[in-house]
Figure 1 (cartoon, rainbow, N blue to C red):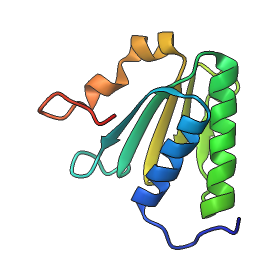
Figure 2: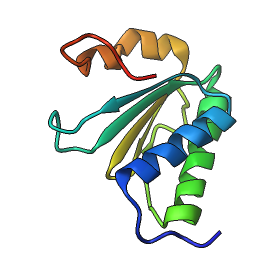
Figure 3: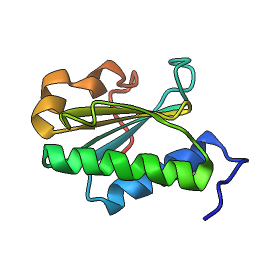
Figure 4: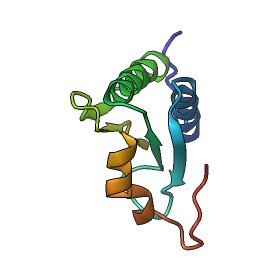
Length: 119
C-alpha cells in the first residue's frame, strides 16, 4: 500500500486502534488531548500479555504507520517490552505489560473532569 500523504490525526488514530485490536491488545483506551496538551491530539494506552507481545505489537504498528502514512514514529522501550512509547507526532501510544500499567496508572493523569475515558 502506498503511503498516504494527506491524512488527519483521526485517520492515524483509527489505524492505530485497528492495528492494536488486530494484534490482540487488551484494555485499549483512547484519550482526546485537544485543549489539554500541545504534545499531540490523542493518546492511546493499551496492554499486552507479555514483553514479547508488547514488543511485537509496537514493531508492527510502527511498520504499518510507515508503510501506510509515511510516518516515521519515534519508539522507545521496545527492547525491554515493559512500557513502549510510540510518538507519531499527532498520536502518542503507550503499550504496557499489565503490571507496569497498573503501577504507573497513566490514565488517571489524563482523566477528563467527568472521570470517564473513551474505550
